[in-house]
Figure 1 (tube, rainbow, N blue to C red):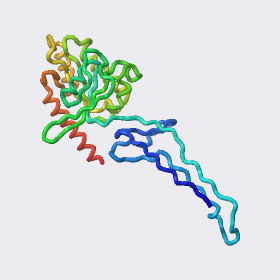
Figure 2: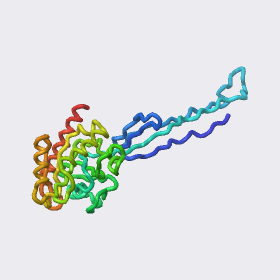
Figure 3: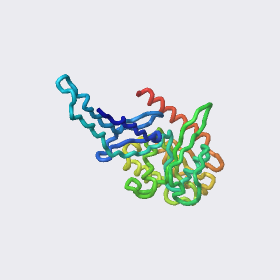
Figure 4: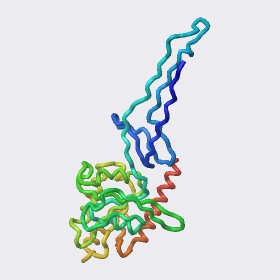
Length: 265
């Protein structure tokens, strides 16, 4: 008539935004988006029964027992998707890290060469009275990113939860390529990565306004945005030009999205 101790629960804390998938099938089992939310990944086995359980009036000393059963076993894949309201996208060296440092207190690495950002950065942008939203800066994207080229592909999932995308396009005189071609290349990568991602509201920011030179790239991008009905913000993160208007726009878009989400729920 013996019994073992009950097994202890194994609790593994994970960050908010963790997606739990079945490793074999890829099925999404749970999306942990709320503080304190829990998911039971596997239940422990049923305990056995000692010989006294089988005692009866005709069997006073049973010499057999029922063994316990093993617990559930499964292989899981955990994927972290950051929870941000607005996401910064664009080619490498488009000025994303400089902008997020100007909008918030985030201090990402900033340098004048591609792929300075090697991991996502989050910043809290304050606006209005007691209002704020979270903005995410991901590594720059390049053509072929949806197939794994470059660094940005592995981080695109971090902007899938955002309510608005801010596409940064370099309009300085030193920038390479046509600004509209650069914008369309990145949007094509978004579409190939996820048909839902490309449907998100998107605004265009022409960066490095202070060194636009003759302004041809600025004019080309401004006309394109007008024809395509994109909200366009020429900005300079260093001098602060255009930043206030951009923050007001992003804050309004985030509020609009949040109101719509609450209405759906």
